[in-house]
Image (cartoon, rainbow, N blue to C red; front, side, top):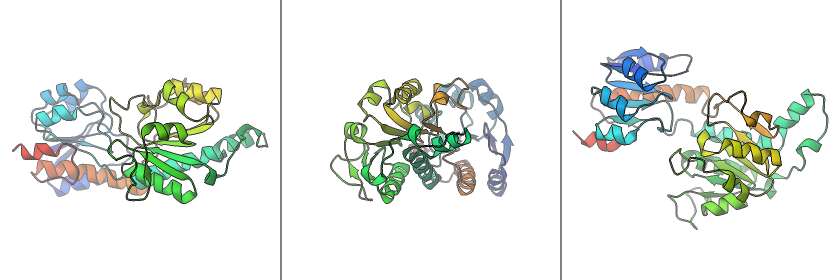
Length: 322
C-alpha cells in the first residue's frame, strides 16, 4: 500500500509519516505540477495527497489503481470530482480545519483597512506623519459588514465582525432570504449585500458561477468608499477590475489573501495600490491548523485504502459503489 504526496510546499511531513506508518502504508514524497508529472509519480499508489496539482479525468484514467485523492485544505477545485466519482475514486478534503484561522485573518484584514493601520505603518516608515492619506476613517459601529457565503468560515467571520460592533448581514444561495442563521445573522439577497455593505467579505467556493463574481459590474454597484476582503479563492475577483476600483477611489481599500495567480506576480497592478493590504495566502495558517490539516488529510485517504469511511469526503456516493 502506498500514498504519494504529489505536491506540497510544507516544511515538514511528520504528521503524514506517523499516520501512514501506523496504518502500514508506505509514504512517498514528490513535488510536481503538471498532469503528465502527476501520472508519472503516482503510478502504483492507492492514494495521493495534493495541494495544487491537477487531478483531471486524464490523470484518473491513467491511474486505474487509485482509490482516493486527498487535498490539503478546503477547496477541491483542482480535482475533477465528477470524473473521480464516476471512476469510484474518493475525494477527501479537510473542510473545517481552518475555520477560526481564516475568519481571524479576514477580520484582521478588515480592521487593517478600516482603521488604515497597514497604510499608516508604511507612511511612517517613509517619513510621513499624518492622517490625510487614509481619511476618512469611520467608527466601526457605523459600518455595515456583508458576508458572501455563510458556510463555516463565513459564519464565523460574521459572528466576529458583529462582536466588534459592525452591523452584519449575509447572503448564501443555500439559505432562505429573510431568515436568520443559527448565530442570528440576517440572510438577505446577493444584491443587497453587494450594494449596501461598507465591508464586503468573500467566503464562497470557486465554481463556474463564482469565477469573477466580483467583476467590473459588481464593483460598480458596490458603495463608493467600501472595502473588499477576500480570503476564499483568488479567481472569485477580477484582479484588474479591483485594482482599477482601488486606483479610482471607488473602493476605499481591499484586504486580499488570495490571488488569481500565486505567488502574486511582480507586475500585478495590486502592488501599485497603497490602499490594498496583501498577504501571501496565509489565512489558513496557525501552528494548530498546520498540524491538523496534514494529519486529517492523511487519515482520510488512509481510511479509504483500508475500506473505512473517512471523516470528510466530497463525494460520499463512491462509498456505496461497492
